[in-house]
Image (tube, rainbow, N blue to C red; front, top):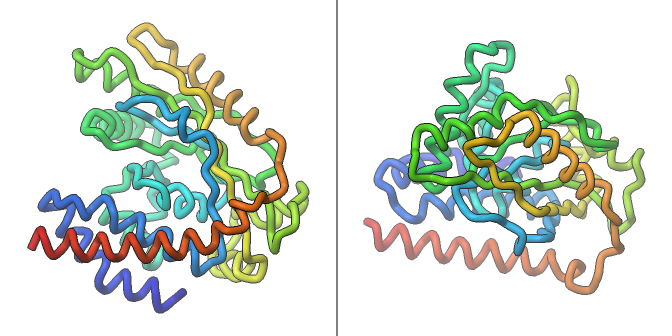
Length: 285
Protein backbone atom coordinates (compact mmCIF):
# COMPACT_ATOMS: atom_id res chain seq x y z
CA UNK A 1 0.00 0.00 0.00
CA UNK A 2 2.89 2.36 0.76
CA UNK A 3 4.23 1.82 -2.76
CA UNK A 4 0.82 2.63 -4.21
CA UNK A 5 0.65 5.86 -2.18
CA UNK A 6 4.13 6.85 -3.30
CA UNK A 7 3.24 6.06 -6.90
CA UNK A 8 0.14 8.21 -6.75
CA UNK A 9 2.12 10.96 -5.07
CA UNK A 10 4.82 10.92 -7.75
CA UNK A 11 2.55 10.47 -10.79
CA UNK A 12 -1.10 10.81 -9.87
CA UNK A 13 -0.95 14.13 -8.03
CA UNK A 14 0.85 16.03 -10.82
CA UNK A 15 -1.46 14.56 -13.47
CA UNK A 16 -4.51 15.41 -11.37
CA UNK A 17 -3.28 18.98 -10.82
CA UNK A 18 -2.79 19.41 -14.57
CA UNK A 19 -6.17 17.82 -15.36
CA UNK A 20 -8.03 20.11 -12.96
CA UNK A 21 -6.20 23.19 -14.22
CA UNK A 22 -7.08 22.39 -17.84
CA UNK A 23 -10.60 21.15 -17.11
CA UNK A 24 -10.03 17.63 -18.41
CA UNK A 25 -12.79 15.10 -17.75
CA UNK A 26 -10.21 12.68 -16.38
CA UNK A 27 -9.91 14.93 -13.31
CA UNK A 28 -13.18 13.42 -12.07
CA UNK A 29 -11.93 9.86 -12.47
CA UNK A 30 -8.42 9.93 -11.02
CA UNK A 31 -9.58 10.44 -7.39
CA UNK A 32 -12.16 7.65 -7.77
CA UNK A 33 -9.49 5.31 -9.09
CA UNK A 34 -7.13 6.33 -6.29
CA UNK A 35 -9.79 5.77 -3.62
CA UNK A 36 -10.88 2.41 -5.00
CA UNK A 37 -7.30 1.23 -5.22
CA UNK A 38 -6.49 2.16 -1.62
CA UNK A 39 -9.78 0.65 -0.42
CA UNK A 40 -8.89 -2.59 -2.20
CA UNK A 41 -5.41 -2.61 -0.68
CA UNK A 42 -6.83 -1.98 2.79
CA UNK A 43 -9.46 -4.68 2.35
CA UNK A 44 -12.21 -2.07 2.78
CA UNK A 45 -15.36 -3.16 0.95
CA UNK A 46 -17.77 -0.29 0.34
CA UNK A 47 -21.50 -0.87 -0.19
CA UNK A 48 -23.85 1.93 -1.24
CA UNK A 49 -27.49 1.92 -0.18
CA UNK A 50 -30.27 4.29 -1.20
CA UNK A 51 -28.53 5.93 -4.17
CA UNK A 52 -31.94 6.35 -5.81
CA UNK A 53 -32.74 8.84 -3.04
CA UNK A 54 -30.00 11.26 -4.09
CA UNK A 55 -31.59 14.66 -4.66
CA UNK A 56 -30.81 17.10 -7.49
CA UNK A 57 -27.86 19.46 -7.61
CA UNK A 58 -26.76 21.88 -6.24
CA UNK A 59 -26.22 19.43 -3.38
CA UNK A 60 -24.55 19.24 0.00
CA UNK A 61 -24.01 15.71 1.33
CA UNK A 62 -23.99 15.71 5.12
CA UNK A 63 -22.70 12.63 6.93
CA UNK A 64 -21.52 11.38 10.30
CA UNK A 65 -17.79 10.86 10.68
CA UNK A 66 -16.12 7.74 12.07
CA UNK A 67 -12.66 7.53 10.55
CA UNK A 68 -10.19 8.96 8.07
CA UNK A 69 -11.19 6.02 5.85
CA UNK A 70 -14.66 7.59 5.46
CA UNK A 71 -13.09 9.91 2.90
CA UNK A 72 -11.81 7.02 0.79
CA UNK A 73 -15.18 5.27 1.02
CA UNK A 74 -17.12 8.34 -0.08
CA UNK A 75 -14.68 9.23 -2.87
CA UNK A 76 -14.77 5.69 -4.27
CA UNK A 77 -18.22 6.43 -5.71
CA UNK A 78 -17.82 9.94 -7.03
CA UNK A 79 -15.48 12.69 -5.97
CA UNK A 80 -17.17 15.41 -3.91
CA UNK A 81 -15.47 18.53 -2.65
CA UNK A 82 -14.53 17.73 0.93
CA UNK A 83 -14.63 20.18 3.81
CA UNK A 84 -11.79 19.16 6.12
CA UNK A 85 -9.86 20.48 9.08
CA UNK A 86 -6.79 22.49 8.11
CA UNK A 87 -4.46 19.90 9.67
CA UNK A 88 -5.30 17.45 6.85
CA UNK A 89 -3.35 19.61 4.40
CA UNK A 90 -0.14 18.65 6.19
CA UNK A 91 -0.75 14.89 6.36
CA UNK A 92 1.96 12.85 4.61
CA UNK A 93 0.96 11.87 1.05
CA UNK A 94 -2.81 12.03 1.62
CA UNK A 95 -2.53 15.75 2.33
CA UNK A 96 -1.05 16.29 -1.13
CA UNK A 97 -4.10 14.73 -2.75
CA UNK A 98 -6.42 16.77 -0.56
CA UNK A 99 -4.68 19.94 -1.71
CA UNK A 100 -4.60 19.04 -5.39
CA UNK A 101 -8.31 18.12 -5.23
CA UNK A 102 -9.06 21.65 -4.01
CA UNK A 103 -10.39 20.52 -0.63
CA UNK A 104 -11.84 23.35 1.46
CA UNK A 105 -9.79 23.55 4.64
CA UNK A 106 -11.37 24.90 7.83
CA UNK A 107 -9.51 26.52 10.71
CA UNK A 108 -11.59 24.93 13.44
CA UNK A 109 -10.31 27.28 16.13
CA UNK A 110 -11.48 30.38 14.24
CA UNK A 111 -15.16 31.32 13.99
CA UNK A 112 -14.07 34.18 11.75
CA UNK A 113 -13.13 31.58 9.12
CA UNK A 114 -16.72 30.32 8.75
CA UNK A 115 -17.93 32.96 6.22
CA UNK A 116 -14.95 32.28 3.94
CA UNK A 117 -15.53 28.53 4.06
CA UNK A 118 -19.28 28.87 3.46
CA UNK A 119 -18.73 31.13 0.45
CA UNK A 120 -16.35 28.57 -1.07
CA UNK A 121 -18.83 25.77 -0.41
CA UNK A 122 -21.58 27.78 -2.11
CA UNK A 123 -19.44 28.41 -5.18
CA UNK A 124 -18.51 24.72 -5.45
CA UNK A 125 -22.16 23.62 -5.24
CA UNK A 126 -23.32 26.11 -7.85
CA UNK A 127 -20.48 24.98 -10.13
CA UNK A 128 -21.97 21.48 -10.05
CA UNK A 129 -19.75 19.80 -7.46
CA UNK A 130 -21.16 17.90 -4.52
CA UNK A 131 -19.86 19.32 -1.25
CA UNK A 132 -19.30 16.78 1.54
CA UNK A 133 -19.74 18.08 5.07
CA UNK A 134 -19.18 16.00 8.19
CA UNK A 135 -22.00 17.42 10.30
CA UNK A 136 -20.49 16.60 13.70
CA UNK A 137 -17.37 18.60 12.91
CA UNK A 138 -15.14 15.78 14.18
CA UNK A 139 -14.75 12.02 14.00
CA UNK A 140 -16.41 9.88 16.68
CA UNK A 141 -16.14 6.40 18.18
CA UNK A 142 -18.87 5.08 15.89
CA UNK A 143 -21.20 4.25 18.78
CA UNK A 144 -23.62 7.04 17.91
CA UNK A 145 -24.13 10.32 16.07
CA UNK A 146 -23.23 13.59 17.81
CA UNK A 147 -25.12 16.85 17.43
CA UNK A 148 -24.60 18.53 14.07
CA UNK A 149 -23.07 21.99 14.01
CA UNK A 150 -25.29 24.39 12.03
CA UNK A 151 -22.65 26.96 11.05
CA UNK A 152 -21.72 25.45 7.67
CA UNK A 153 -25.34 24.76 6.72
CA UNK A 154 -25.36 28.49 6.04
CA UNK A 155 -23.43 27.68 2.84
CA UNK A 156 -26.75 26.63 1.31
CA UNK A 157 -28.23 30.01 2.27
CA UNK A 158 -25.20 31.76 0.78
CA UNK A 159 -25.64 29.83 -2.48
CA UNK A 160 -29.22 31.08 -2.76
CA UNK A 161 -28.19 34.65 -2.02
CA UNK A 162 -25.24 34.70 -4.39
CA UNK A 163 -27.15 33.00 -7.21
CA UNK A 164 -30.79 34.25 -7.23
CA UNK A 165 -31.76 31.95 -10.12
CA UNK A 166 -31.27 28.92 -7.87
CA UNK A 167 -34.48 28.07 -6.02
CA UNK A 168 -33.20 25.43 -3.60
CA UNK A 169 -30.17 23.47 -2.48
CA UNK A 170 -30.42 19.77 -1.71
CA UNK A 171 -29.25 18.71 1.75
CA UNK A 172 -28.50 15.00 1.37
CA UNK A 173 -28.27 12.92 4.58
CA UNK A 174 -25.80 10.04 4.53
CA UNK A 175 -24.73 7.59 7.23
CA UNK A 176 -21.39 5.82 7.37
CA UNK A 177 -21.47 2.51 9.24
CA UNK A 178 -18.75 -0.12 9.54
CA UNK A 179 -20.71 -3.35 9.83
CA UNK A 180 -18.46 -6.41 9.44
CA UNK A 181 -14.84 -7.45 9.88
CA UNK A 182 -13.52 -10.77 8.56
CA UNK A 183 -17.12 -11.61 7.60
CA UNK A 184 -18.44 -11.28 11.18
CA UNK A 185 -20.91 -8.62 12.33
CA UNK A 186 -19.41 -5.85 14.45
CA UNK A 187 -21.02 -5.00 17.76
CA UNK A 188 -20.67 -1.60 19.41
CA UNK A 189 -17.29 -2.51 20.88
CA UNK A 190 -16.04 -3.76 17.51
CA UNK A 191 -17.14 -0.58 15.73
CA UNK A 192 -15.44 1.51 18.38
CA UNK A 193 -12.22 -0.44 17.90
CA UNK A 194 -12.21 0.34 14.16
CA UNK A 195 -13.06 4.03 14.64
CA UNK A 196 -10.38 6.68 14.38
CA UNK A 197 -11.03 9.61 16.66
CA UNK A 198 -9.55 11.83 19.34
CA UNK A 199 -5.75 11.83 19.47
CA UNK A 200 -5.30 8.40 17.88
CA UNK A 201 -2.26 8.04 15.62
CA UNK A 202 -2.86 7.33 11.96
CA UNK A 203 -0.24 4.63 11.26
CA UNK A 204 -1.42 2.19 14.00
CA UNK A 205 -5.00 2.62 12.80
CA UNK A 206 -4.03 1.71 9.24
CA UNK A 207 -2.37 -1.44 10.58
CA UNK A 208 -5.52 -2.21 12.59
CA UNK A 209 -7.66 -1.97 9.45
CA UNK A 210 -5.30 -4.26 7.58
CA UNK A 211 -5.46 -6.86 10.36
CA UNK A 212 -9.27 -6.68 10.49
CA UNK A 213 -9.72 -6.97 6.71
CA UNK A 214 -11.96 -7.47 4.95
CA UNK A 215 -13.97 -4.68 6.57
CA UNK A 216 -17.42 -3.82 5.24
CA UNK A 217 -18.46 -0.17 5.18
CA UNK A 218 -22.01 0.80 4.30
CA UNK A 219 -22.90 4.25 3.02
CA UNK A 220 -26.62 4.80 3.43
CA UNK A 221 -28.30 7.72 1.68
CA UNK A 222 -31.61 8.95 3.09
CA UNK A 223 -34.45 11.14 1.87
CA UNK A 224 -33.10 14.60 0.98
CA UNK A 225 -34.18 17.95 2.37
CA UNK A 226 -34.73 21.08 0.28
CA UNK A 227 -33.04 24.21 1.62
CA UNK A 228 -34.96 27.24 0.34
CA UNK A 229 -34.75 30.98 0.88
CA UNK A 230 -36.92 30.85 4.00
CA UNK A 231 -35.25 27.81 5.57
CA UNK A 232 -33.74 28.02 9.05
CA UNK A 233 -30.21 26.58 9.00
CA UNK A 234 -30.43 25.45 12.63
CA UNK A 235 -33.71 23.61 12.04
CA UNK A 236 -32.33 22.01 8.88
CA UNK A 237 -29.20 20.92 10.78
CA UNK A 238 -31.33 19.26 13.48
CA UNK A 239 -33.52 17.48 10.93
CA UNK A 240 -30.49 16.31 8.95
CA UNK A 241 -28.92 15.03 12.15
CA UNK A 242 -32.08 13.08 12.99
CA UNK A 243 -32.16 11.48 9.56
CA UNK A 244 -28.48 10.54 9.64
CA UNK A 245 -28.89 9.05 13.12
CA UNK A 246 -31.88 6.99 11.92
CA UNK A 247 -29.84 5.72 8.97
CA UNK A 248 -26.88 4.87 11.19
CA UNK A 249 -29.08 2.99 13.64
CA UNK A 250 -30.89 1.02 10.93
CA UNK A 251 -30.95 -2.75 10.87
CA UNK A 252 -27.54 -4.20 10.00
CA UNK A 253 -28.17 -7.18 7.74
CA UNK A 254 -25.88 -10.09 7.13
CA UNK A 255 -23.89 -9.84 3.86
CA UNK A 256 -25.90 -11.27 0.97
CA UNK A 257 -24.61 -13.06 -2.09
CA UNK A 258 -24.05 -9.82 -3.98
CA UNK A 259 -22.14 -8.33 -1.05
CA UNK A 260 -19.82 -11.34 -0.90
CA UNK A 261 -18.98 -10.78 -4.55
CA UNK A 262 -18.17 -7.13 -3.95
CA UNK A 263 -14.44 -7.76 -3.54
CA UNK A 264 -14.19 -9.05 -7.11
CA UNK A 265 -16.42 -6.25 -8.39
CA UNK A 266 -14.16 -3.66 -6.76
CA UNK A 267 -11.10 -5.19 -8.43
CA UNK A 268 -12.89 -5.12 -11.79
CA UNK A 269 -13.95 -1.53 -11.08
CA UNK A 270 -10.36 -0.49 -10.42
CA UNK A 271 -9.24 -2.11 -13.67
CA UNK A 272 -11.96 -0.47 -15.76
CA UNK A 273 -11.32 2.88 -14.09
CA UNK A 274 -7.61 2.65 -14.96
CA UNK A 275 -8.43 1.84 -18.59
CA UNK A 276 -10.82 4.80 -18.77
CA UNK A 277 -8.26 7.19 -17.23
CA UNK A 278 -5.64 6.06 -19.76
CA UNK A 279 -7.94 6.64 -22.71
CA UNK A 280 -9.06 10.04 -21.39
CA UNK A 281 -5.48 11.24 -20.87
CA UNK A 282 -4.57 10.10 -24.38
CA UNK A 283 -7.52 12.01 -25.85
CA UNK A 284 -6.83 15.20 -23.91
CA UNK A 285 -3.11 15.20 -24.78
